[in-house]
Image (cartoon, rainbow, N blue to C red; front, side, top):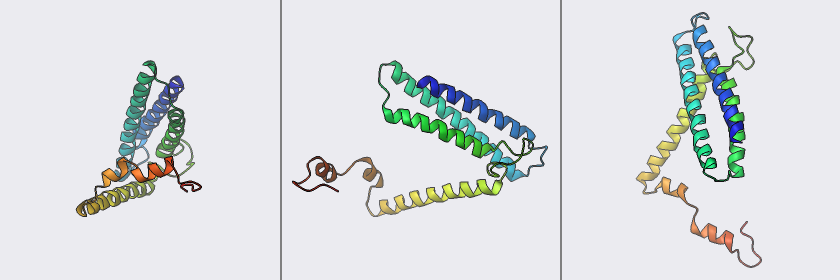
Length: 169
């Protein structure tokens, strides 16, 4: 499975960098404005981060497999899903079927700047909400990080030994 992931990673890295070089080289020809350049450069940086993540995953999991560990089924499913999701993101972010390539399939991605700005604003709003409420709860004396680190003992005990004739759900 590691070889399949490696082949998929190489294909996605090659494809996304090919799109990146073509798009960045063609931006002056299509008369791109400053915001389009900024979005295209941001997507190119995401392409580099994505490549580093795939290589790191391949190294980390491959090292453990060569050491004799078995790959859990959930890791295998995660690899398959990661390759599929990554392919979708490459196609969405670069949308290679726009001028000077071909015709627009999705009309989203780097060429549709308002789409990218909306997505970035959505992620920024999500981060503001998360960190804002974490700070608010911390001021109330609630350690939010600790809440997500462990399952309450009462819940685990109830699942392991339910009352006679009573199921926990």
